[in-house]
Amino acid sequence: MKISKILLPVDGSIYSDNAVEHAIYLAGLSGAHVTAVYCYEWLGGLTEINDTVIEELKAKMRLQAESVLEAAGRKLADNNITYDTRPLSGAPGTMLSNLAKSREFDLIIMGSHGHSDIAGLFLGSVTHKVLNTIYCPVLVVPENA
Image (tube, rainbow, N blue to C red):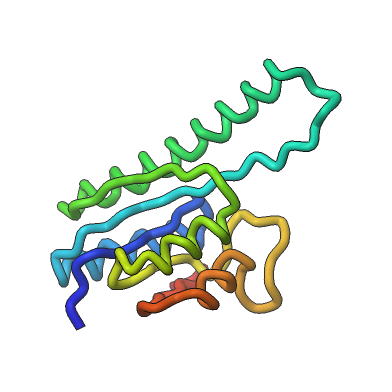
């Protein structure tokens, strides 16, 4: 199996950090390009908060995404891995599921859990959703890997 493009969802959790380390290792072996993505979602429904505050909250979410992606990018660059980053606005499960179905990637490397408040029984809910929509191999990295 030739690995030339790796999808790497990140969220700043320990699981995500471990996935970055695995992506560095495998991309180093294969020469693959890594696309690190951070998905964030504005849930809305706060009608009693004024628009200025809502826009500030959305901007903070975007800054958080960029910060996590920057940290992952530094690790990748420090190890001479070619990469790009994509902050994605939308429900993480849906966004990653769509990327998984795009057939753009040869391998997905992701943490078994993340920062989600609602986790699956054995796997994080986002990881579970991606696993149900994949066409390519997925490396699910636990906390202590």
